[in-house]
Length: 334
Image 1 (tube, rainbow, N blue to C red):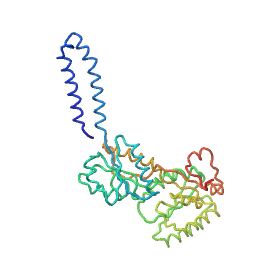
Image 2: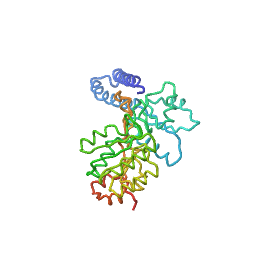
Image 3: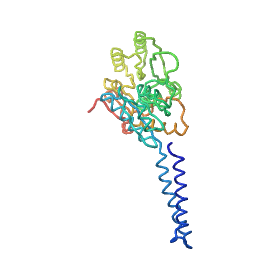
Image 4: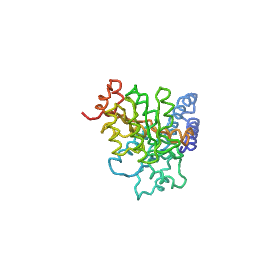
């Protein structure tokens, strides 16, 4: 925070000076001078306090890379969202290869920095006396900063599955590697509480994945679901076509985090709500300044929902008015 001590001192001096003026002014040095003091001193304190609160407003500096449209819109929306979620002033710095950030930071003296993307993070970490940092718009949760990763929270995407297809009893998913995966963190427990089984297959490469998908689809029951993870789960165009054909013939639910999959026949996908995610990052910046934030990357919870209505009709899924209110994009577009 800026000028907290200076603002309080200015307020104290203003009150002291006003008191001296009333006391020594010949026109006010009478019996009713004390009455005037009681009347105006509170007003002076309120006025100077207002100036004080303005001067101690925190400042957030948002860093994002200069990229071509339509990708630039993503960073602009996240930045605008951050402005709405942060309690204070916000400035934006678009980084290109020629941008020299150190002079700008030395001039602005931000209380906290929001770095969007890897390039912004590298630039921020090269600063001398770098302010506290919040991180966003990255696809890995390996960083030890407070922030949000662009991987949907498993609970969020599985909740949408059960809203659209409440009869699902088994969910199949191919994972690229063994060990803890942020894309699946807590998914087993979440589905177990709802009497749904999550079956995870491990694949070392795309050849192994192709074999797993073929066997999985052979054994899958009507009403089962196939989850394509954020990293693609080794799904190339050939495997995706195989998935869609089997899903259509066996009434399987295919869902992912890629709206393009919905366009081609998957039932639904979630994708980032960039402005709301930005607002959440702004709120994390508030928490950092209040010393209430952990250096942890959180999965994405601010998402939009795209649904393929034709696929839903084939699966016998009717979009009620309540469900439609939760859908942000219906494909094929009418």
